[in-house]
Length: 321
Ligand SMILES: Nc1ncnc2c1ncn2[C@@H]1O[C@H](COP(=O)(O)OP(=O)(O)OP(=O)(O)O)[C@@H](O)[C@H]1O
Ligand SMILES: [Mg+2]
Image (cartoon, rainbow, N blue to C red; front, side, top):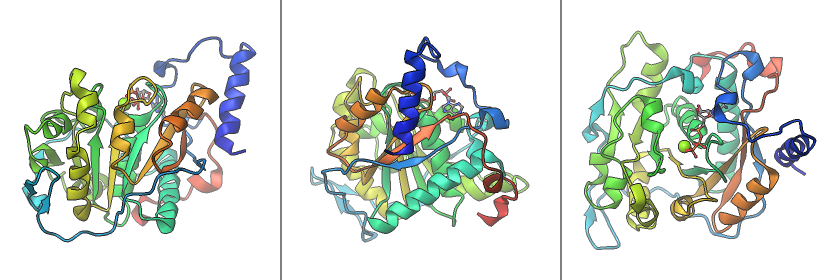
């Protein structure tokens, strides 16, 4: 049995034993860079998935044709509008120069690179069974961690068109966004945004933010389910793929709404998030079942309160990224 299931089952038995007598709230575990509250992330192998992986093979740099027959213009990242971003550092530990969270996301990133060595992998949807398990936190910090490695170009998409929050973490505008693109009100380049060049003195941000392109959620409201099933999402992933090394998509929880299941069909893989001490074993299992038609890469065990191993933390140098 994998460590993720062991952890979830232990939390379950603690809960039954009265050690956890209520559903923990997000505010119970505010992120803190201190060792006691350092989150731990782990990717565990998932059960075998049935569906084929969408090809992530490089595509030619020319206009592509959509299912509706309209041409999707070739993209130049220089045409993507730039805005001032004021990232919320307390929610983005992967943006820090060094520290345990940088290290934890780095190991998650390494596992993803290993998976890519086995099968083509570029677009990864992040989801979970229920709200507040840390999908947005993991999606954004993972995107940053990928963007700080080997100068990789990363597209981060807020695919949660109901409770879109990634713009708050990055400190930028939520509109126009994915919902505007999917409803045909805007084109791909119009909903993308990049950060204004940070001050040269800001060493870490100068190295990371230029590699990150963001599509905010936009406001899907009660149309979010229909929008998520729109073939324009697949067209967006296909059209954007040649210009990015990684595409990370945040999403809604899969048990209450079907949006993430729809979006997952266009993605190469799905990472499921389980929150230590919160996510019940059965919830993780049901989430996995909901997404069984997609390529589930594994679980990220988020917000586990364990001491990091000294050897993996001390001596880490951000310059080596
Ligand atoms: N590892 C962590 N350490 C500390 N705080 C965390 C961690 N993961 C998530 N949080 C916090 O928990 C709250 C919920 O996280 P997040 O918004 O990422 O969850 P979510 O699964 O995206 O929720 P929703 O389904 O509502 O979109 C946020 O305030 C976030 O900052
Ligand atoms: Mg979220």
